[in-house]
Length: 529
Image 1 (cartoon, helix red, strand yellow):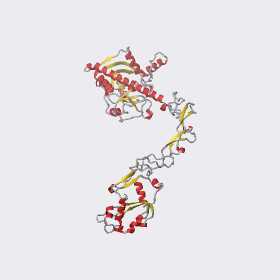
Image 2 (image 1 turned 135 degrees about the horizontal axis):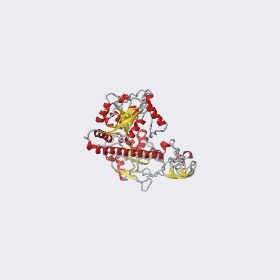
Image 3 (image 1 turned 90 degrees about the vertical axis):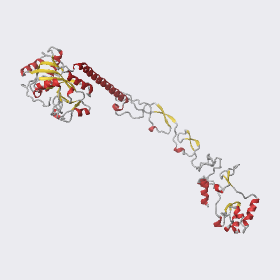
Image 4 (image 1 turned 135 degrees about the vertical axis):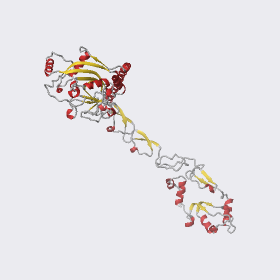
């Protein structure tokens, strides 16, 4: 029966603590098994209800006597009064029912009172009138506050008595208190331990690093304090440290200094804009020249011979005689210079520069040595890619040095050099032979226009003097045809003597005078021209 009582108590929405601590909780026992212990209140369930008024064991008077004699204060009998009173064979229940009816103790309802507030006026109550209604599973008829003391023993529960099951542990009433150690006033929940709470009051501090005043939470030790003021130090770059005083300064100002980073960003943006402007200008100039000469595209090729006294002639002569390497054993004398006018070739060159080049700004004059037939074919039809690849692939080779392009291996007795406008654009620098690795398509896939093999890389598989290679014939325009003759060894030495004695003042530039082959024996380089 104790278990039944606990179960019913739980269904009412009351906790185990409510059951255990109920001050006047009565023991519950069943009458049948022990013939009944005395108790203040006895509840008797007769469990007999049928149309024939068959009473079974209830017809025994001793059964009724046992039930009636156990109660000291009150007894409740639950049963079917009509069934009990209708038994003709046994009148003992009929007389009892008549007596209860006469004194008003028989009725169709059971009054339920809230166990927490039964002494209140009026006491919260509910009357059960229909057996089908069932036993109530909560105290939803009680509209008073619970008012039971919480575990703290100081505060009462403020929830409604009708509320679902609730605990009286962990009182959350806010109370005033003083923090341990600092005695700052604060508030906490009643159930919280003051020793577990950290004082959040702001207290004044002075930063030991920058001496500036600040505040911090009272509970925070100075060892954990980080000053939020700007760092007073200067970085090695000269700019103010961008970090806070409490944070470490950047270890690498070049990477971490925000001022330097921003300045570098602006510098790169300016260079990018400048490059874009130069690219647009170069392409626009190419387009303007293209449109200007387009009407003459059917014009036949022509050669304009330069006056030996003109500045244009002298500039080209200087380029030929000064871009000479002693190792080649060659010293030339320029006999004539002709400027080529080939509108079709020029339009192809300008179109490539305007529409195709990765870098349209870099156009340079470079030398190319070839045979007499090669001169005729190039000036009339333009360059052609060779069938067999050279040291850096099947491209068109150019040199900065006239003496390199003038080697007999390339000129084959023509005594002629071509000085060409070459659209070098973005050059891929290589220091060893690439053979057939690159062509026009693969080079452009890597965002380059040409290959550049720098001087003094022969030991690593490269060349002794600069070479440039392009893989599209439209990247070069043969602008000048230069006829020369090779000066004898004596004449070459006489020229050197004049330069050393100051009788002849060379123009500024990289002047290297060659000793002829009759004085210094050399072997030509083998890169194709």
